[in-house]
Image 1 (tube, rainbow, N blue to C red):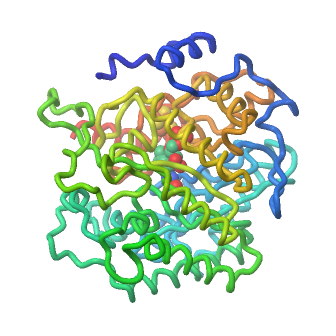
Image 2 (cartoon, helix red, strand yellow):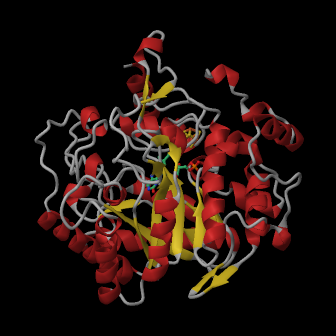
Length: 487
Ligand SMILES: Cc1cc2nc3c(=O)[nH]c(=O)nc-3n(C[C@H](O)[C@H](O)[C@H](O)COP(=O)(O)O)c2cc1C
Ligand code: SF4
């Protein structure tokens, strides 16, 4: 399939055409024929459960900007992004953005750092967000703000954008090759893992002191927490069995509970995955990206390097271990769960469905709507199985003009508790708020998944919506991005 065969959603003028399109593709995505406004809108329903009182069903996903200072403090661009998170009107701010628990664990030299000297900067981010939220909604009742804590593991680049410094838990037959890691590249020792666990405890304490309501112990997108879950081949206490692969999570949680008794804990989880994909060079024309293809099926099955995949056919989903993990969350008293999929590094089409690939990506191997449907259905399945967990869904931005219709249907029909917005918040933060208010929608701000917000950081530039947000569009960064794309 080429992108030519995929219908651009922007060309569908009515929700009826969109519904017919879904039917033609045989995709079971719930979609209402009309947008409901005011208190009747499912997106405006408050949710009270256990200790949580969350004022509506709009969640803002964590979105980092590669724009902190080298020391790890927020820059002007970071502050602006958090203001826009607040402007969204969403009452659940899931983590703000990935904040590294130690310098070595940063994904790039401009990632925020949860260190004691950064406390003031983090407090400022929380504060500007809250104030902007007040401007949009008139009240900060029911506003719940978390901080996403991360160690980037295999994707660490703490010192230079162009210099990977991977911290790996095991050798991966495909991902090692991508990073040109030799066979004897060292894996993190158990002692180093213990020290990273302590970093998580210290970082959570900072978040608690600053006033965040919860911390997210990130377990998604190929970063360290996620890599633990697939560490089948790792020997010792932190790998192998399910107990071993979840020991990291259990020890992080245990320490946070004793150090910060009032702080809630959430987990953002890549609940499903597939094998790494790559651009097929033999099908590339004029050096342009071609359609993504999966790494040749592993010659040695079962596949022992995935989580949420069928070991006998790793291109298929298998929810048995994710279900077991959610049972563990219940045991650990973790009520907040954010479901996502795969990784932006090795299979971006399942993680952030898009029509246009980022500079290191490939053309979509499936209609991006199939990627949206996959994330919706996985979340629905898990929500049905775990009604007491508060669940945020991901991957909605590709729905574009029809996002409000799908979002309100998904909440009303109980597919998900909160609709999480990623890229749409970069281009049009208040989209769902305005739609559920009955305000005229600003179509020119709707994210069309051009992927520049991913291409920019891949080229060492800060992220942002270069095509649609005037702030970036008219900055000298836009010129630099244009140059980088030509290279
Ligand atoms: C520029 C950019 C930065 C992101 N940063 C983070 C991050 O810090 N933490 C995280 O868990 N996900 C991150 N994501 C993934 C998003 O939270 C979200 O899962 C993804 O974009 C799919 O949702 P969407 O379709 O609404 O965009 C990022 C995505 C983009 C495009
Ligand atoms: S750059 Fe803007 S339009 Fe493109 S995917 Fe990112 S948010 Fe959407």
